[in-house]
Length: 525
Image (cartoon, rainbow, N blue to C red):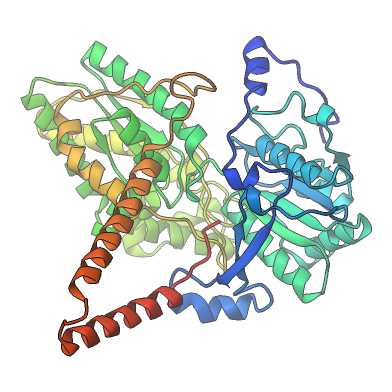
């Protein structure tokens, strides 16, 4: 384990300037005291899953929604001191250090005697009670900086009975009131399971999961999409400058393609293939290939022999026949079949598909699985596969296309038990609708955009992700439509209107009220 974890960093001038940046907090968190009130009970997004989740989490399911109160409603009086632990779990992602910084500041604002302990070395440090007390000096060179090197991380799971017992023993021995687990889907699923176990055993430690992930599957994507969009824009400018290359750019993102969608809206590539639309349309590998080739031909007819295509790394699992093949390989691995023997144990149709694939893809599909028994998506060159198939198809169509590969990123898939699932792109949502409206223009026109890097001050410092801005406008627009209808009802339902119309209006409003009360959902982690 790295003994330098938590040591002061040697910062460059730019890093020192970045460390001075103060993130803007919402008004309810700007006071010296943070108070809350409890609202309606939480439930699942899909009502059909409520019973299953309630059975899996009988002690933590259905808790009350927490609402933060404004500064004017702050209470007086000293709060008892708290002891809180924090651990990094999952791959290094932007924002991890700022979660610790924000937690530390909030704890100290509530009571200067509060203590925040960081577990050194990830979950292994949690089990072994290896701690570092978080202080102003410890945080000084880590504020607004990337990486997880303040505390480090190792094995990214708290799952077995022994691991759960070790975590509980640590929390009990250190007298922790809370434990914060920072990570992605799998880490937050482990946090939910751990919280349930702690509640079942009457532990005083409250477990909180904080989503920090590169994959965008929990829609936590500002830093990575800003950085990646700038890189994509550089590729776009290179493509239009040379005028003779097609770039196939693979982005991080498991089953959810939020990163690809946001980057497409920021940088305006010629094509983007989203996993959700492939899964919905059940597009085959060759149908995707032909779709890309059709776009290449359309651009060639305009005299353009270059372009940029974005591909989420989870795309390969969204293709029906590839998903079925990977599932067969997964089952064979679980039955302890050696990788060299897997091809001979595949079903006839799966074996035929396997042999159709280029040798480099075949070897990548047989790589050992991730710790959660999923395929190593980050090691599967989906962009190379599509480039290979597109080139072969274009050769058949008597056209030539050159390809290069750019950008890599890790992937994650949840385990097969009650877990926090990826938040997929809403193919009926406004953000996707905007992308579809611009797809033809992006394809045929070199409408490339250069959003620039992250700004900490001055113009652009308050820029939000485009998808978030669109969703906010769409949501507020719906609220405005509702208010307009209510205003019209007030005018129409004045004394003197017919009893039938009045009863119909009352009945409709009652139904709407019951629907609203029955669909209060927990925010997605």
